[in-house]
Length: 440
Ligand SMILES: Cc1cc2nc3c(=O)[nH]c(=O)nc-3n(C[C@H](O)[C@H](O)[C@H](O)COP(=O)(O)OP(=O)(O)OC[C@H]3O[C@@H](n4cnc5c(N)ncnc54)[C@H](O)[C@@H]3O)c2cc1C
Image (cartoon, rainbow, N blue to C red; front, side, top):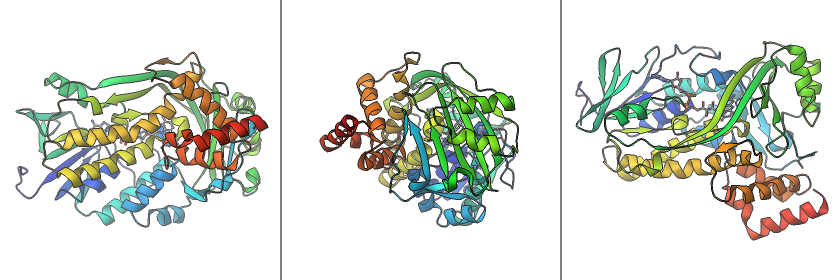
């Protein structure tokens, strides 16, 4: 099929978040022209924007996401470093869980740490340089999909039709595309939702070289550790983003003194000590997320040709594990594999992609959604064996206090470089049990 302009195959991506940018890069190898339509005005500088309010909170890119982005955009890490992003090594990660600090792992470089805004603006710049057949059009909100004879043929913007051979919805967690398709007679994906009533409160503060004795990131807390958590990650401009979180209805305060007191209530002092001495650069901003939300696209038995959804539109995860952007990148990788295998016009493409995407988000989903069933207040779609798994993961966390091999493997899993099953091999279980017995 050709576009109305008759000049090659075309694809439209709805949304210029991380999912949209990665998807456009993948599509640029398979379509003659790719257009990203983004509702927001996209800034030239690394400043937050309205369409991604979560971007004001800490946004750590996991190692798996870093590797994928580096592969699609060679030189990205150098660009980020030149703009002040901070390379985080496993040895500089301060992680406190279940009563003690984890033994430092020797995995080396994990990922760059920067604001979400810097990552987006730098990836957009690289995309322009490396994929000249991609155009980003901002201030353009897509109203609906155009569906003709059961096939998606493009999108409608302010009553104007934009035709395309392939449309990818990267429009985030609150996307309406599946409702629109349901209105056209297509089955809607089943939804799993795990209610956690999470609230995050973030503040940017000045970072001094001697903060944390030179260590580079802090994670305090986790599901088995009570409902309060805290992270502190370095970003460009010699700043920290501190994000305090709480689950099951409690909202961390935005009053500066109460914010400090909340940080002090965490089970380890590393973050509160820095906050107490630091110069605040922003007010405290809050964000709420009621559920982990998964749309089971992999179970759909009928999909309109010419369309898929990807990113948070498919799976939106509790942010404490920092998996969202990497999950989007893994899905984009799955799209590339499906396109290589089936080609852009195959009626099998959507099904093949969704099957792969389902596998890609399975691990992150089990980590982010399953773990909170450790607390009886979590409600919703509980996967089989979640209780047993959580008890075991609790032991893994304890083993990380003393066992380097366990801490190493746990970090690989948490960075989505290894599957959660790798913590369940007989050798690993033995290590975990021995470490726990030793009192880890
Ligand atoms: C508090 C918080 C902290 C987080 N921390 C991390 C972290 O540390 N690490 C991590 O990896 N992830 C983190 N996440 C998750 C991460 O933000 C998401 O997983 C990620 O942004 C998903 O990317 P996306 O492109 O799918 O969606 P989004 O980033 O939501 O982007 C969707 C885009 O689509 C646009 N759009 C929507 N509708 C339309 C339309 N109709 N027409 C045109 N454009 C449209 C929006 O303007 C937006 O630009 C966090 C989330 C929260 C809430």
